[in-house]
Image 1: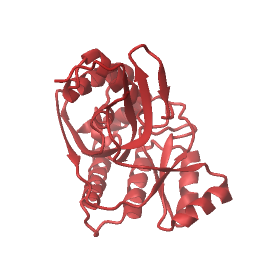
Image 2: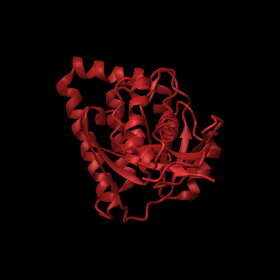
Image 3: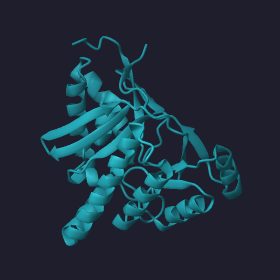
Image 4: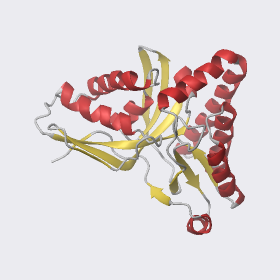
Length: 273
């Protein structure tokens, strides 16, 4: 393996297309690296375009960058494993999907079979995906660790009902996979809407964020949170889609939403000059 003789790396942010929370319990998720990046040097100066606490993998991007220097060679498996340990220290019981998509980039099918055995495969997207936009619903008051614990409590109290939601989320996740593989039987807007409704049933979307999403749906679009979510105030970054791209700017102007385009399937860990 090539030694990291350079002193600078960059890592991407991420969004989860489908599978939030369910992925912690052995169900699959599809995640993608995006065009916002964190840059780190061995000396410890760090710059990042990734919003903190917005469900976009800022902590995973940091963990992977630090792990790259710690491992000392461009071995993605070792770097990813080390980053997962750092994520566990921070979040308690993460699935590992965040650090894995940040490390490898692109589109990723991911499943946590057990704590010590995880399966994932990069997806070669055959579909020309329409543009997606990001809207920040506000930084959640709850940490990712607290949101994971919240769902764990729900799972403990209502295991059968929660597992049924997870199974339905898995169905949506498989729909996203078929969409990426260019199956035109699946429509992006409907997949996004269905995913959001299931996350709302889990209770991880705040009332404020629900109102924002309802507005977007009223205007003919679809939206969903991406990440652990939030309950009391904001729920982090929201993915927004509309068949008519021109209407996106009209929605943003009408409701004073700060919408920004996002590129999917971006490169993972990268050595910088």
